[in-house]
Image 1 (cartoon, one colour):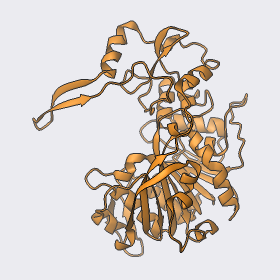
Image 2 (cartoon, one colour):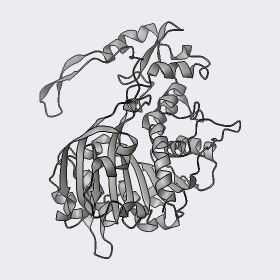
Image 3 (cartoon, helix red, strand yellow):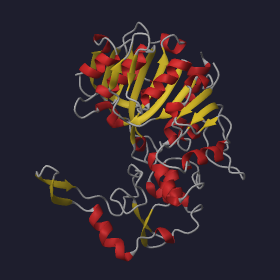
Image 4 (tube, helix red, strand yellow):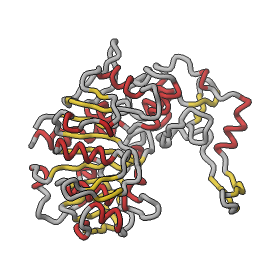
Length: 414
């Protein structure tokens, strides 16, 4: 089986950067790809903006060939090239099923929910392997019926003939420069050699889960099980699921699920201080990122603890409270989770004390790229505000780079 990839919701190319171990850009602004993965197709479209900054960045680094800037809802999935691996980081949405259609057409989810576009690709292309990334709250959403959304996903994969593995990974616990918790999902067709190895035997989360092999755990705790075969179909899961949230790591084989809490086998720290040191050669002038004296009180207020009396829309009074945050950041630790609001006058933005400037300042766009383990100046194709947004929205590419050798071996063994 060849190492061919189709990338959905490509953003600025995090999966590709990771799989092909990209660490720099050449003089013509193209990515220097050091891996063996051929990306036969990629789609990136931002419906809420006219300017397509992410797509423009992606095609500047990788060229225009086989790259789509069309709304994925409108893409003819049959025309996507064949591939061995489908990848994508997709939004956490409401995955409830809108209605049941005729038996010939099956069950459809709500329009505009991007997971159903993933399903359409799997139906059309029968992708052997799938690697997805999402926020970890997916495992316990929605708040009104915890776990239902992920159960809908698992049942969908089961009906399409896949086994599934997942793991919540905090990059900062595995020698990466950011405390970012995300769930990674690996699905594989039941008829593959890789799948046959775990058929007909008692599942072992430590032995059989690809992520727990690559990102070691001390132990699996509170191992639980559930049987999705008790539900007739995806619509039944959507309407009647009542098991509760899914735990941090798990597997599904033929509708049978085991899952557990885990304690990570924490590896050496990659500190924010190291990022600040590395970035010096790329940041020509950091003075523009310094905190103005007149805004210092505002920053101190945003970062401080609060107890504020508020009134809801129905007239109910309540106390809004939040704890204090480190101000400036603790640079001996990995960075906190970066959000799309990074770089703005916002509580979540990182503020560091620059020892050379002897001033407080915001992170630079290059530092944000390094925290997400992208090559420096990867996003310099767009305005600064968009650069911060893209990095707040991206994945830690080092996680994908670390998964890559195992994934390559699995696919080449088919």
